Length: 168
Image 1: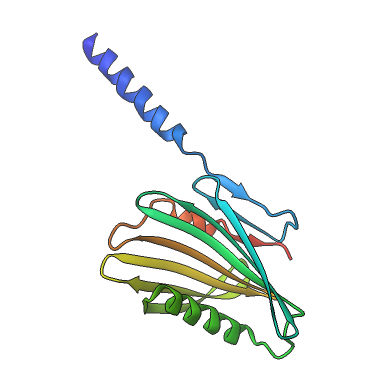
Image 2: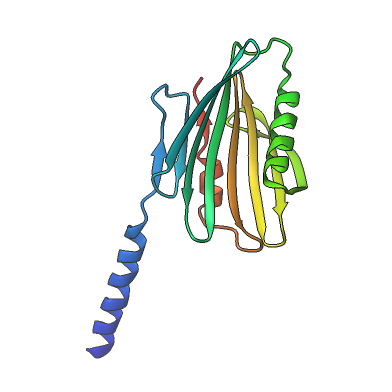
């Protein structure tokens, strides 16, 4: 009887822990993409002008003590007619590496949400890794990033990357 009581308590604690974190499916008002975060993300937005180009930047992020999940994208209006997807991706990747003071450790071409993409691993200092996916869907460049301690990949990382889809 005592064993059954202990087992019931352990199982109920496990259920409480499992239900404490609910994933959050993000679908912006324009329904241009979907992605699932481990929990509800924060949103930040910025606009600027770069010559004749209007730049609108969005960032969604969810952070824990051990990791950070980020989806950010930039909309260029009008979309530069001479911008090639490979150039847009290269620029976004090098900009991210420079912004975090990191080092590009690995880069592989892939397809994500039916579009050409680049998978990257960026080292930041000795203890932080950024696993990222960069996707160009005209007129947007999407950056899907997971920051974590080296050697401690978050369980939700694969679901985060796999959940990304675009509709426009």
